[in-house]
Length: 95
Image (cartoon, rainbow, N blue to C red):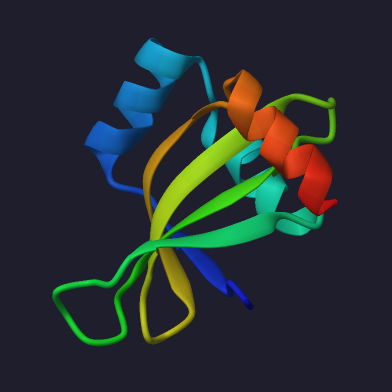
């Protein structure tokens, strides 16, 4: 999967900063550090499916990013948070 650009809505940035303490920069690092992608659900609009990207930041923090891929290879970020124990275990098996 090739992501060419990120779409950040102001409310999402505020939410992930206040609730999960994840900066947009940290979330974007996941996409550059060999993430594991997983299809969550087919989108209501053709070609706009919901995915997760799991990986590590440059500082070693394990994050999972929820996003919708747009036909233009842009990722609309929906949420970002630390992986829980089971997600880290699953991620470890996939890398």
